[in-house]
Length: 347
Image (cartoon, rainbow, N blue to C red; front, side, top):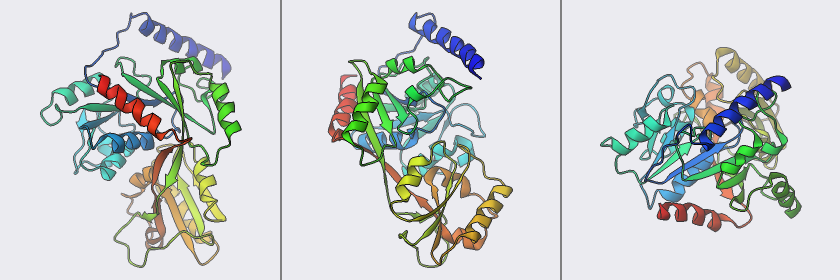
C-alpha cells in the first residue's frame, strides 16, 4: 500500500499548497468558529470533546454544532429538532441532540452552505459560536480556532497516510492547529509519558498542548421501559462490552479497573447492526459465566442499537450504556478554558 499512500499524499500536498497559496479560497466569518478535528480516520473522541465545549459555553453563549452527519440517510442541510430521527442526521449528531435537547445541532456536508443557513435562517441567526465537528480537512471554511485531536494509543506521529495507515493528511498538517489534544489518556499518566509525547509531537511555539482522559458516569439502561431493578457494575460482574468505535482500547482498560471479567466484541466505527450481529451478541451474552451479567455499550453505539426490534427480552433487560465526559489533565483545565474564551471574546 505504500506506493498508493505516496500518490495519495501527493494529491493532499497539492490541495493544501493551493489553499496556502490562496489559489483555493478559504471563507472567513465574523463570528467565532471552533473546529474540532483530527488527521486520522476516526477514533480520537471528537464527539465527547465537542460535548465538553458545548457544556463549557452554553451558559454564556448561544452555541451551534455543525457536522456533516456521517452515514445519515438524508442529504443537504438539516437542522435537528426533538422529533428528528437518527438516520436523518447520523448517529453522533443525534446522540448530542438527545443529551442536549435544547442545543442547536445541524448537519451539512457542505460546511459553507451549513454556516450560511445557521447565520441567516430565522431559527438560528442569533447564534454566537459555531463548533465544527470533524472539519479539519474542510479548508473552504476558515475556523478561527483549530483543535486537533490525536489518540494516545496511536499518535499521528506513529501513523502513515491512507491507505497504508489511517492518516488523512501528512503529519505536517498539524501545524495548522492552534492546539493539539492527546485524547484517551490513562488518568494516571506519568510525567515521563507527557515528556515523551511532547517530544514526539514537536509542536510549534504558537501551539498549545493538552492531554485529556475519559471520566465515566454510572451505567444506565438503554431500554428504560424494561422491568426489574437496575443492576450495578461490580468486580464480580461479567461484562459483554459491545463497541462500534474506531479505538476501544482505553475503554477496555478503564473497565478492567471495575471488573475482572470483560468479553469485548468490537465492530467497525459507525457499524450498522444487522441480524447476524444481534445473534452474535445474544449468543455471547448467553455464554457469559457467573450470576451477575451485563452488556455494556457506548453512547454512540446505543443510538444504533436503540431502534432494533429483534433483541430478546433478556438482552433488552441487561444492556446498559456507559456515559462519558472529557477531563483535561495536568491541571490544565483553566488554561484550556482561557484559550477558548479568549478566542471568542477577541472575535
